Amino acid sequence: MTTPLLFPGPSLAELDERAREIFRRVVEGYLETGEPVGSRTLSKGGVHLSSASIRNTMQDLTQLGLLGAPHVSAGRIPTHAGLRLFVDGLLEVGDIAEDDRRAIETRLSAKGRNFEEALNEATAILSGLAGGAGVVVSPVRDAGVKHVEFVALSADQALAVMVFEDGVVENRLMKLAAGVTPSSLQEASNFMNARLRGRTLGEAGAEIRTELDDARRQLNEAAARLVEDGMAAWGGGEDAQRALIVRGRANLLHDRETLDDLERVRMLFDDLEQKEQLIGLLDDVREAQGVRIFIGAETRLFSLSGSAVIAAPYMTGRQKVLGAIGVIGPARLNYARVIPLVDYTARVLSQVTNT
Image 1 (tube, rainbow, N blue to C red):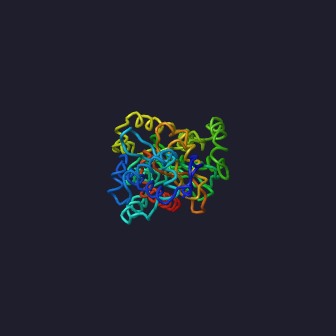
Image 2 (image 1 turned 90 degrees about the vertical axis):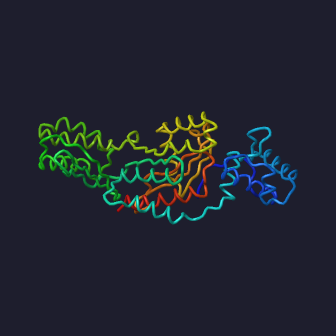
């Protein structure tokens, strides 16, 4: 598990055994219930100290910036710095539950699923199992194209298949105009293969569109339209056209804490609409070797809403990173459960997108 730059604050080594135990119990209690944890709760829950001793230690932890008091008479909750310290040093992450493992494998391995459908399904799985919003960003297509083919599925529908040199295969469903013949499909395939083979979409996209205007004299109209629609479907490989899929926003309304702060929920929903910033955040995850976690102000995007992001890269069979997938939700995510869910979903997604 890799993390971004930590919040400034004390390390676990600076806390004595008493402070560490009380801190751990406060955070675990808060993550479980969403409620502030008071000294009486801790003394009844197995901390063999007086309430006064517990309060004094909690006050010390508050002065260190690890705990906060939402109300004057309430107990304590962890700050974002406290959550970071807990996640990095005290969180015990187990293996993924067998039922979750089977659900992820079964749903992502469904026969006939193309690349885009797999990305959609992966985010739906995570949003359902983790209880937050599932999010995934499609790859930067920087591999050269190996082969392009248009395959008729019916009288009015075709499948545009693009095979990249890194082994990734992407399919796009396209509507066909009336009267498109097999020769038109072949002609369009030949035109694109001649100009794309060995080059990236970004390198060849603009040139193809320019040449298409001149080539209409040689291509029949149906073939020219197929080339035009095919390039539109792939978006020319530009970052601005990369798909950002967010599923399960409604899950963010189920948390009692967030419902008590509807303004924070509104800010989080606004954050999820910031496509370029969210893609940039997930692109940072591409450099990680495993799960990466961002909490609150560690990202500019979620600093106001105080949300957390748990994400992991998915990759080709040759271990080349394609993109990132993860969960976004309130800082009170169930980290012990969500981290292995994200990690396993990313690994299965890597497998099914390269078969």
